[in-house]
Amino acid sequence: MTLQSINPKDLPVPQTYSQVVVATGSKLVFISGQEPEDLHGKLVGRGDLATQARQVFANLGRALAAAGAAPTQVTRITIYVVNYNRDECLPIIEKARVGLFGDHKPADVVVGVASLSPDYLIEVDAVAVID
Image (tube, rainbow, N blue to C red):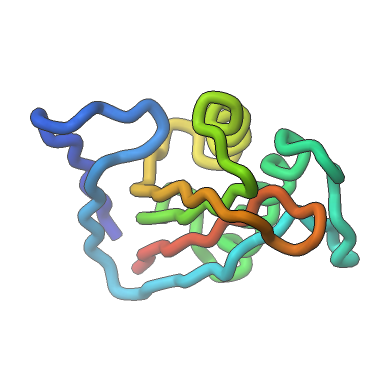
C-alpha cells in the first residue's frame, strides 16, 4: 500500500492533515465512528474535550489494529465535534490526533454538530487502505 500526500501550491498548507491523499492498495478498511468510551461502553471524561479526544483516538487505534491496519495507512478521517469552535477545539483535537498519527497526515474533515450521545463531545471515523 502506498499513500501520496499532496498539498497543492494554491491551497493553504495544513499543520495536521493533507489536502489530498492518493491511496494505492488492495483492501479498504472502514472504521465506524469511535466514541469516548472505555472497554465497558462507559463515557470517559464527561465535559472534558481533551480527555474525550484522547480516548476517541486511542479507540480508533485499537479498531485499526483489529483490522490489521496501522495509523499510517489511514487515508481519511471525519471528526464530529459538539458546539465546534475552531480556535478553542482544534488545538485540543490536534494534540490527541498527533498522539495516534504522529507525523502521518490523512485527509480530514471536521464537522460541528449540535449533539452526539448525551455528554459526548467528539466522535471520529476513518478509512484506511492496506495490502
